[in-house]
Length: 78
Length: 193
Image (cartoon, rainbow over all chains, first blue to last red; front, side):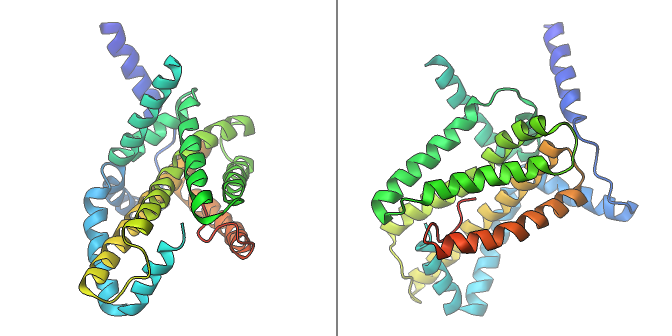
């Protein structure tokens, strides 16, 4: 059991260190990037789906018939 | 037979993993030696093109998709990055294969919607509601696709954010004219990438 845990931990450490952390050059940029990145690393759909629904409703409200035509076009696109 | 079932289970676990924890799952995919689970993506793509060929007679669609897939994998493998070209190629095949998941979901669901709610859409309440749903659905899948592409390039080539963006922009610059060419040749209306 101890060996299994140790093997798993080693594997996890190897995985975590496979790429160097991103450094965007400026500490502020790196900080902002890391704050935003959290949302994309785990369960991104929790916030992507509501934003997409609001965005889609906004697009239909603003552009109206153009978006409805776009949907028809996409539906023929498969 | 047993290894096929195991690879299917691994494929399903990774597919769910890419929805819940895309970062950790893509990192694990890039590090694993096995590649059998990636075949299931190919099987799903073949099955899709078999259906659409009988529906819309797009005989060249599958060849176009295979060409785009292999072209993308070879293109990224040849770019300067960590590890040798063969390693990058093997990692890229697996991770880029999994970036086709949102594409497959979108194409399959569009095929189903084509029969359930056939186009063209109207400006009625139901038509507008479906349009909102469809745009949100497509947009969410597009965001997921972009996340997976970013992670695929990052973990396969082991490069930083700026270089991922740089490589992806070069890829788009070369790909967009190719997609337009495929459209004008009647191979695909929306590129299977």
